Length: 96
Image 1 (cartoon, one colour):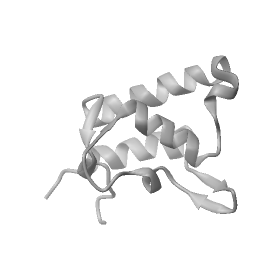
Image 2: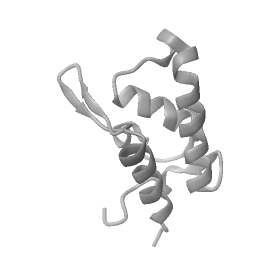
Image 3: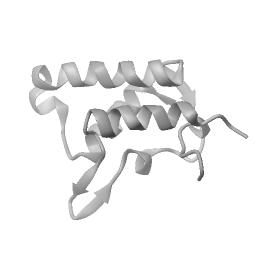
């Protein structure tokens, strides 16, 4: 069985503590996990991009405003997942 505790901790930090939980975008409920590929690797930068997309935010519209958030979220991914890139199978809920 794959150890998913780091993902649970990551999602707690980015969602509960930082508020990047997803939103309704174009009348569709969105969550970062909606963007995960079926297989392969996911980088911290991709994950952060998907967090923004799930909240309907384009950080390029005001990059100086969003850069501290990007940096903090990227750091959260690396700290919890232990690497700037992980296999997508590590990015799932503990009981899914």
